[in-house]
Length: 74
Image (cartoon, rainbow, N blue to C red):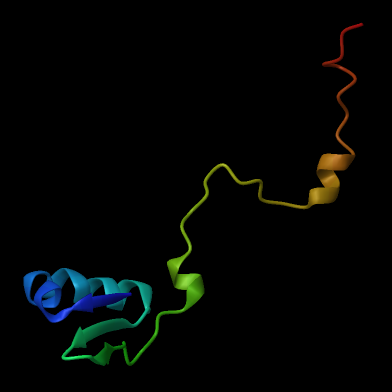
């Protein structure tokens, strides 16, 4: 993401938190040149995963062999 120095000044703390949270560099353009803010320790992609409580946990083969005969109505 590229922003101007004025945008950085207005939102410096929010932008720095965003760089730390995502690990993505922030580019600032000033006087026709670019500066880059990058985190030293990039967070792991696994750390940024969100929880999916509705996901099926277990062996997928068990889903194939479920007995639905008691639920079936002709």
